Image (cartoon, rainbow over all chains, first blue to last red; front, side):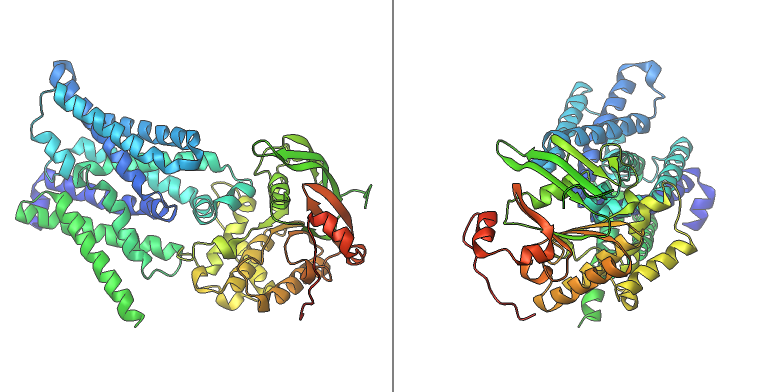
Length: 277
Length: 254
């Protein structure tokens, strides 16, 4: 496998992309989980699917757009979806969770329409749904690297504000920090990470990489920084291990990555129980 | 209590409603610098609403609030104000944060956007924890502590930014009765030793009146505002008119 990575560019792309998303998905996921917004990643991934389907439809309908990278349209849809969610949370102040199923079903509905108009797609869409080792191009890698750097930088710079907002929203508002702007930046970061992760792990499974490593580290982390550290570690082990299994067993990487993350979660629950006997 | 010279907080003719009915009616109140004021009143009397207006969490509908001599709508210097809510009651005990991290979050506004906590800030956190006697718990997860200890940590979080005014919204909810007395003693010490002005919304009328310097009785309207001694001299009939129903005096064992 190591020789394969050295030899084939597609494997290098897949592993380098995997290392990037293995870090940034759990990093964003820590804040998503503690703010009890886990379902938002599912909703946004369905909107990203609509973007991918729309992009594939454009490629099929207009020859001049054959070179269009679906990642860009997927990101645009995902970010657009995040803005809609925020708008809906404002409209339904007392039922804020309603925004999630509305956006999720809207995204899915749009995807089905685009797929129907295009009269079905080839295996490209399968790769987007469940992830693919061979689908990541060098151009994708550069885009995902840029997204990773921006997300890591923003989360580092806004760490203390995001911590306060996550721990005690009322106190954050009363302290006079620009919480609306910070929340908005955070939601856009979530949308970008979802779009960046989908080539490797797949749209239907992308939320698991944001939540499972965090759920595992919640069992025994002492403090917030330690939880971030464990979450990123578990994320990396899941992605690298999952890609390794995927390549050797010829399975979709989304499945193998998630199963490793689930195993880590089960082990952490058992470890926690054993420790607290 | 009228015409306080240079008050730290001034409410002027405040009225507020959520739907149809007013929860606050023409409330005017001046709080002098260095006071320890208890705002008491029955449930639904508008106490917490008044605090939320003061914290800028609700928008003013009628009237005017001045804080540190400035109109609340233009006030930016929020690090001068500490806030402690009913955390021990509503707190998510599963949140994975250490006591140190929680207290340090009180410096967020003071440190400023895109900046990181330095050595000096960490010293301030330790000092704040020391002043509430919680330094030895700094590396423990906040969820592992008792309600009373958690509330001390939240006091430390407010203290860390060295506020001149501290606002507390029923801070003893969820704190066992044994520790409530100690908790109020600690507040008294903050007021007397550190000179912090305290505004406390509470139901523990019997416990606080010998600790605070001033009392305000609110039941939509301000029914009483004066020295704690004056409040203690009110008779049953006067208190009944404030609370809107009969008041029975019970003897406390502390």
